[in-house]
Each structure stands twice: as structure tokens, then as C-alpha cells.
Length: 110
Image (cartoon, rainbow, N blue to C red; front, side, top):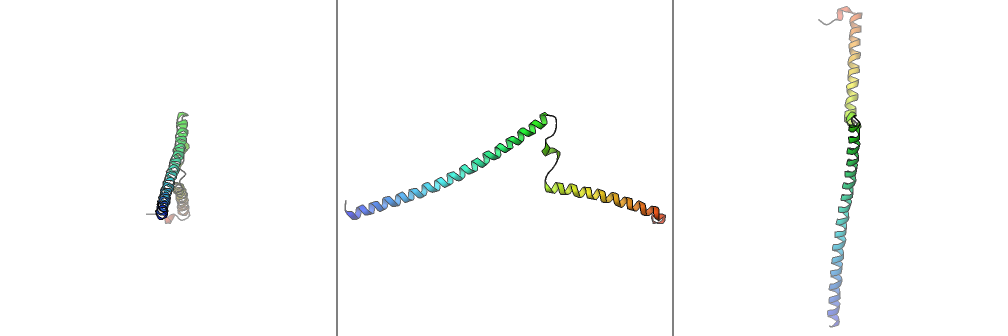
């Protein structure tokens, strides 16, 4: 084999090796991403199993699980606080109206 053909052949081999190495690295990246996703799914499943186990223990003990007895979402907590403030304000206004009516009997609604 002449020298020129040999160099062309080696250049082709090197190019093929580079292409294969690039393909293998991409495949390795893709597989690593898939493994990461699977590990995350497994961790999530484990947490859900632990929560389910805790819930079943509460039910078997004859009491509801904490997650069903009290809501911890900010919106629900805010709504509950607002409702409590409204009820307190409503009672205060009712007492104030009663007090004003006692002081001024002519101020009663007709």
C-alpha cells in the first residue's frame, strides 16, 4: 500500500473513531439522564409509600392522619384567618349597634 493511501486510510479510521466516540458520549449522556430520572421517580415512590404507611397506621389506630385533620396550604390558612377576623368584626359591630341603640332609643331601625 502506497504512503498516500495509507495516510488516507488512517485519516478515515481516525474520523470513524471520532464519530463513534461522539456517538458513545451522547448515548452515555442520554442514559445518565434516564438513570437520574428513574432515581428521582424511585425516591418519589418511596416517599409516597412512607406517607401511605403512616396514613394506614393512623387509620388502624382509629384516628385520622394529620394531613386530613388540618390543612397547611397558605391559601386555606389565609381563608380561615380571614373568616375568623370577619366573625370577630361581625360580633363587634353587633355589640356596637346594640350599645348605640341603648344610648339612643330613637336610633332603632324602622
